[in-house]
Length: 363
Image (tube, rainbow, N blue to C red; front, side, top):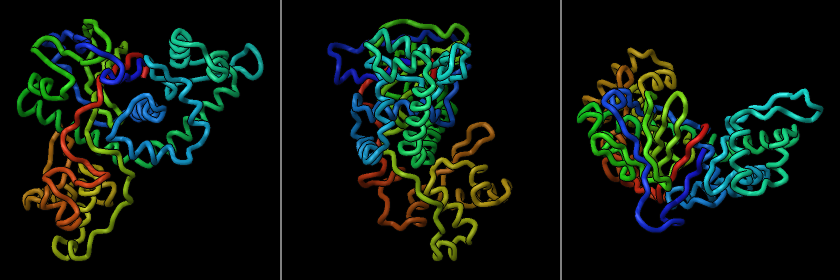
């Protein structure tokens, strides 16, 4: 896949655009992803760790991950170029009959290694991967595992929540004002004139969907716009938020005073929603050991009381605390603003990306 490159840091002149021509039937098939693609998030995060992309929003995350990390992670950076992100999370390898100690390189890895060789000379590690050496793929697996364990796993709930919130907001905008309005508002680096979706990237070309569906995918570790044409679908990725990525908090027990006011079940639901905004009714039911019907009744009461808001997407409902709900669950001095907490590790305002970027290739 093509890598994210910050045009504000590496290019001059006016913006170049991928122009995606959409028909009326194309517009009808547009969907917005509800969940993160964690493999893609991992590749984007490693690009930030490699130091080629800068993001003030993610600087604290980068410092936390880079502190005493496994040396095997650094080997992964050899798979990055200014133009390509490695699809290392899709690599497949199986024993090859050509001899001991070799593997058959999977199509995703083979395609990326071909692009890598065109961009620059292969390192001993990437050459060993291209040759299908089992030891190199074992090192790759160890590096990916170490990266995921340190850079992604402690943040999964936060990433999922931020992506779910961004997706729900886009779908709610489309439901209220139409898909055309949603396309105009989804991100500042994406523009829509009624027939052409213009993506502010470092490539200049005109494309069509050719019958494929278009998927809009918010991503937490994205710092710009990505374009990924695949045989089954075309995906456009955009930054989900301007919020920093923070470590997941362990499930919290409601304050006794809150339980006395609302009852233990509603207090637990409000506390869970406050810790994990955009939680669905089904997720609440599983987390708290309740039936879906019971959970729905309690969220209705909380919504009527002005403690939570809900956004419906088909049969799925996402719940987010109101300012009053947050104040009750956490104390009035903990948060300020109607939607986002303040402080060094908390969200504040709409995201402005550091620059346009463009992956395209297997992800």
